[in-house]
Length: 190
Image (tube, rainbow, N blue to C red; front, side):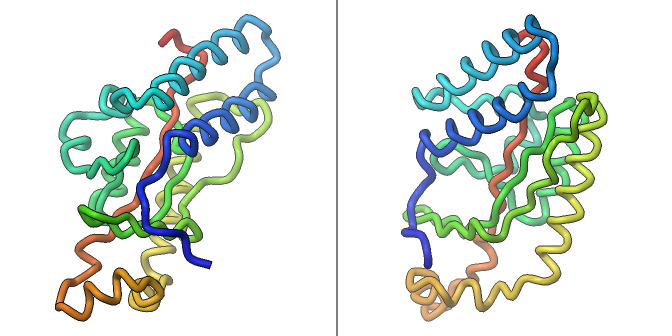
């Protein structure tokens, strides 16, 4: 079943962050650290729900943000820039939560949520720096795999909107992006 072409909602972003908080809190035995983590995530979730500027703008390098498209409340990068964005997140000590393919047009977003590049779940007692490295490596490997094995033509033709674009000669691959999600260390004061 295909999703309706639309921009993602703030509630969807908040739900992703809330799920991540729940998972991370299981790995932190220290009560004070869990409370700090919760406060930082709640601030981020409140920003997302209120529609304030996405926090990533202040967490990644300006040149990486400039390469992104901002649709709805999420940043998405062209395939040629995905690895650059993930490496920049690694450099800034951000964990890669994952991402998904989508065709972005000014009037529509065709989400291919089943083509995701998320890393495996955080390991029990995994140090933050180790999780940053592992999640980036896994997301890049999964991205490369998805790019080489996905039948993009078939994926595009499953969308009536994209079929119409193809019929008028638009190369829909010029509109392929990956929305990427990163998480700052929740134990650092925000």
